[in-house]
Amino acid sequence: MLNKICLIAGFMTAFALSISPLANAAGKGDPAKGKEKYNQICASCHGPQGKGDGPAAAALDPKPRDLSDPKYVSTLTDEHMFKTDKEGGAAVGRSALMPAWGSILSDADIWNVIAYIRQDICKCQYKGK
Ligand code: HEC
Picture: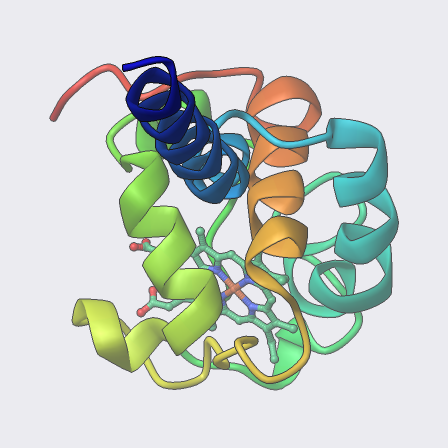
């Protein structure tokens, strides 16, 4: 009887451990770490303040989105931003000039960048369409 309880407790611990990394990734991410990646990768097009005015933006049509516009960014879910960042604009029906970063950024990096955009660039959360 005691053995059985130990076995069940063991399974439950293993299960809890196996889902916790996922739970972390789906949580809000770390804005400070996200800022580093944003400045390294996103700012060249989206601009250091997210206004869509980075040095590479002049050559692009359509222009990189103004990520500092809370009116627009609050219509985008975190999941939409995640897919856009990981798989590129074309994966979400936008321009392929927004590149896919899935081979460069880990999922955790992407959640960190999203947390940074929400906290410091648009200062907004998803509010619905
Ligand atoms: C090579 C230039 C370039 C870089 C670098 C870039 N983007 Fe973009 N991004 C674009 C363009 C262009 C669009 C506009 C696409 C459109 O409107 O069809 C865009 C759009 C977006 C959107 C809006 C998607 C939507 O549904 O409207 C988000 C969010 C975004 N980018 C996030 C990022 C993040 C985060 C990074 C860094 C990891 C990044 N971008 C790096 C060019 C870039």
